[in-house]
Image (spheres, rainbow over the protein chains, first blue to last red):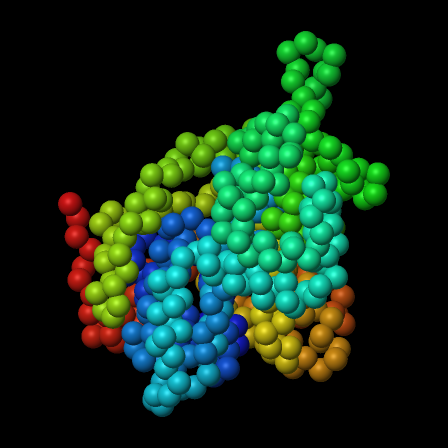
Length: 79
Length: 379
């Protein structure tokens, strides 16, 4: 599997909204964050409608719940 | 439902940096995350926009604001005070601060703008419209063509969405447009992917997607409470899955890929601004699709390789759909053969996982108690 090694940059663009339910979303975010090496970045991209914000809020919650010390930079763009 | 190239696109993007290992518990910024969670979308947008303005400097602002406000005689100093007030609204007519400005705007032009805002084309028409026909109504009669002589906007000049984007740009609602940032190589590859299916097939597929799009379904999430800790509400209904076959892949490349690629490029350029010494040496793209992120990385960091950026990028894309992966191979192999000195994307896997669930449920079994949430209820 490619997930055995660590990554520098993990990207999930418009993927979380395609996943079937919230549990799989949370697990996917956890997996992506685990696959990062120290100092790596996780980039999650979603559309600007309410469902997109719903999925991206899960990112924040999931990374916070386990007391992971992160320097979290949150932006929402009008691109 | 407007095709999302060129007009304003609200989007949520999170960039998280992993600083320390799991064991040490320091620098847990609770308040910051609380603010992230419960602040509205608009406040964050205005905050980020003010940051961008500060970064971009005064010159751009002044040039924009002169375009924006010269017709009603407000000087550019008062613009900066007003600007933060009317960033919140999505609709440019709904802002009270701008009401006085827009009253002086001609009502004809407003009507034309309104028409543009509600214009919903699925595909651009192939046949040329006969202007001498009596039934033909020009939708852009009232809109002044200011920049027509100055700049050449390419073959999409007649596209109403391009006009709308240009007008929003001149009003200062958007900073720059991503539709213009596509390189010719990207468009060539896009056309190659699209060439495997006919226009009619793509149109049929897009029509199917548009009919399935349900705004009420999306608005359900607006009222949902997000509680702190483990009590995250489970979604009742299991979401309908998209299956990306060959037709859908061509339609995706035609419709969604340009905008999503440019957004990805925008976010990655933000990342490049945040940490200039960061170099993506190993990239994992979960749900890569046609690997537009690989191309964005290639465009952003492609020149850094010769300057000691830290070795070649290894790009790993994972997707469920075989045809998406074929499209990704089209996108990526040409990058590899492009030029060896500027080649950064060394594709060591693009993997088709037979199901996402195989991949993503693996850690759930490993950390069985890490997710103590209630299973989703069906009603």
